[in-house]
Length: 183
Image (cartoon, rainbow, N blue to C red; front, top):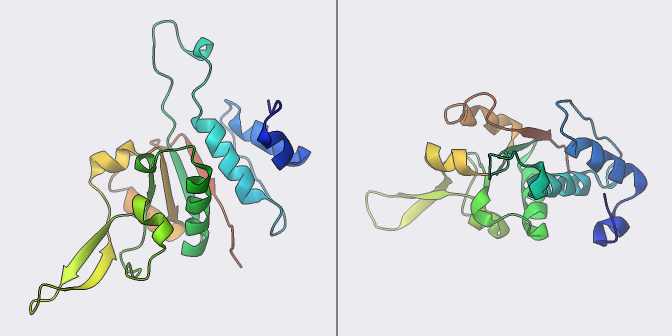
């Protein structure tokens, strides 16, 4: 499974076993736990990378040319944790920026945003009636067609209800709840 690539050196045996277990074609719940700094987030990011890899051609049905679409939701208890995992995914560069969306709370100040995540968030300017200058910038959510097209959506647990307006139950093939940086 890991062969002679860089992942062979990056993950310990327990992490490799977890990645293998989470990428199997079995509908089950998997709990990944460990102390802070033990590599849980890196293990989740590698699992997501592997889930999004196209399977070998032999896996496809004889009559089908496309693999089943994988849609991944990543939920965290805090914005800090959601930003960290979104950054980790972007840093690994295995998914196009157009395939990942970081859903932000509209109450979060967009002027003080994490600039590394600009390409995967949406903002709207709020203008004052007295000038043409933006007085506030808020996070926004794209139209339903765009939301449905993303391969990965990263959000806080508190923001997940927003998605129910756009997506039907069963939309996501995989759901990860991560607690990175949570105290």
